[in-house]
Structure formats: C-alpha cells, structure tokens
Image (tube, rainbow, N blue to C red):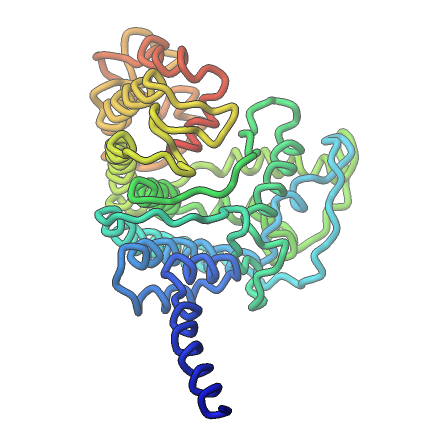
Length: 417
C-alpha cells in the first residue's frame, strides 16, 4: 500500500514539476527587469534563442548602458536640483543632502563616461533591430522596471522608472518656473505589450541619446566644464568650488552666485570643434532616427492585434486618455518627419530672425563650422558663412503638426520619438 502510494506521488510530481518549471522567457525577462538585475538578465537572455530573448538582449543592453552612465554621474554627486535650486529669489528650496561624499570629477572623466555611453547605445541598436524581425509581445509594467542608479548593488524602491518619472515631473515643475514648457510625464496606464514595432522605437531612442553624446564629444567644452558644471556636480571638486562664495551684488549670496554662474555658462558655450567625424555623425544619427520612426509606423500600421499597445495605430486602442492616435495624427507626424529630414540635409533652410531672403544651411554648418557658439549663431555673426538663398522653413512647413498636435506637440514628440 505504502509502495503504491509513494509511486503515485512520484508520478504526480513527475507530471506537475515540469509544469511548475515552465517559466517562459517573458517571465524571466520581467523578473530581472523588476529586480534591477540587468547583468543577470542579459546573461539569461544570451542563453536563450527565441524572439523574446532577442528582444530581451536589446532591452538589457540598452538599460545597462543607461545604468552605467547614471552610476558614473552619481559617484560624482550629480544633482542638478541641489546645484541650481538655491536662493530665495528663485523661489525654490534646496533639497536635503544625500549623505554621500562625491568623488572628484575631471573633464577627462566626463568625456570618458559619455564615450562609454555612446558605445553602449550603439551596442543596443543592432540587437533591437534584429529583435524587430521576430514575432513577440512581452507584457511589461514600465513603472516597475528598476535600475541601480546609485551603484550600491541594490535597485531599491526609489530606483524604479515610476519613482524616477515622479521625481522628474516634480523637478520639471519646479525648474519650469511657470513657463508651461515642462513635458507632461503622467502615465495613467503603465503595462504594455512590447512587440516588434516597439523594438524599432527603442532602437530609435538609442540613437537620440547617442547623438547627444556625440555632439558633446565633437567639441572641446572644457571651459564650460570649469566655469559652470559645479552646478550639476556640487561637491565634486570643480574649479569654482575651490573657494566658497561669500559676497553679493544685487540680492543675496546664493542667488547672486547662481546668476553669475548662469552668465559664465552662456559665455563659455563657445566650443571648438575637435572631432569633425563625430559632428557629421550627429547629422547621420538624426537622419537614422527619422528613418526608424518611419519604420516604426510601418510596423505599427501593419499590426492586426489590439493588446496593450504602447503606440497604437488608428485601428488600435490608445492606453492614454489624453493622447489619441488617428489617421490625421499619423499623417501629420510622417509629414513632420519629411520636413525635419529636409532641414537636416540642408534642402530646407532654417529662418534667421535677423536676415531676410536667406536661410541657415544646417548641413553646411555641420560640415564646416569650427566652433559652436549659440550666442553668435543667434545674434548672426557665426551664421553668416552658412546663409544662402533657397526654400526657407516657415509656419506653413509645420502647419500639419500644429493643426493636429497643437499644444501637445512636445508630449507627442516624446512619445513617438
């Protein structure tokens, strides 16, 4: 009797155990994302060969690059709000100290971090595009994704995407100073079924981020670093912290110091171009972002399902109550991409407020500029060599976008990439 009972138990366990062990690739992907175990997640995906795993490879590579950059900056006390939100004149109280002593930061250190970040984004791009050739739909609660931002080995409750977006929204509102330009980061729905189209979207965003890094690396911004970046890295030993600010001119010490640093920041945005290939590469990345956005919409419009769509087609259900997608929305966005591409290529000139009948050739500036000085570009001197006659962008060029998106254009741009 006992023998038969034990045999029956063994048979039952033999049937149940495989069912309990059948953890899907999507389950493993989610578990590592929600635990902030990016390295472990990457290793797990490398050991698998299905479409979800290929998507996971791209996702974990992308987030690992972001995490590495965040940790590097955190070691040096990166805290723009603590560095900027000081002084009663600006109406913002400085937040509490984090309790960590920042490591000294050098200009060479920062360039190295940016270079590594660009390389990580470029590593993620082909993986995500390869994943986009497969068929999958991985449900992910984006607010539950964790990233070990401070590098202490644990991705805590405060290091979820949800916590980051909440903090960014609060900080944006404070630093926006009532201008209304801060994007709305509210996400009423945060579980999406990420599919092949979304892999293309992520690949595009990897290049948006890489382009910004390459733009900086194409220039010598060391004077800007010395004069102003103690505002972003307070306590990291930058030159303007070598002596405490004790005097005042107009208001009180902290507000006057912030005003002086703002002037120094503008004054030192006069960056020599030291890597022409990187600067031209920024233009090529911008063109790729535009092309990937088109590919993204081609994939979205070809979808026949309607399940927790991150970016829906006009036939699918939008998860955002205030951001709908119609045929007019898609058409306006695609038209805007065409206009943007013409500007990047220099086929459509940018208007300059100071000069009539001529426009600014952005592509020629990328290929020929010896420096980037935003003040002199705006006031006219540095724009002169790149002014020419031709078709100039105007309000009509963006009429379709203005008619459809209106005041929500920044929210749609952030969403659509």
